[in-house]
Image (cartoon, rainbow, N blue to C red; front, side):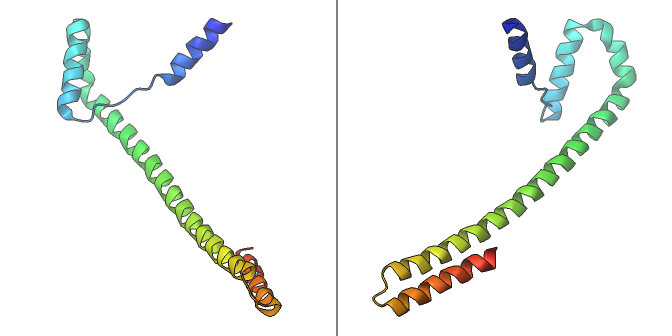
Length: 120
């Protein structure tokens, strides 16, 4: 049972990465052809189709990445607004804590409530 879990973990960790440069891709193809010469004919025959499929995969992955990036940008904007609210709230609470009069303290606490109501 433990052996199966280890195999599953290894499978999850393995990721196929695409070569970044054309020269790297050519090197991979050359290495495969050296170790499997029987594939050379098939490689030349299907090269164009493989390239189209690879470009489609890259395009799809770029779309996914762009969607995730937009989502992260929106979340960052939302978090920035939350931080501003916290600073305003802390400012009002510090004013209330260090107020010299009850009137000043009540005014600061009312300001704190307004900040929270705006956010809620």
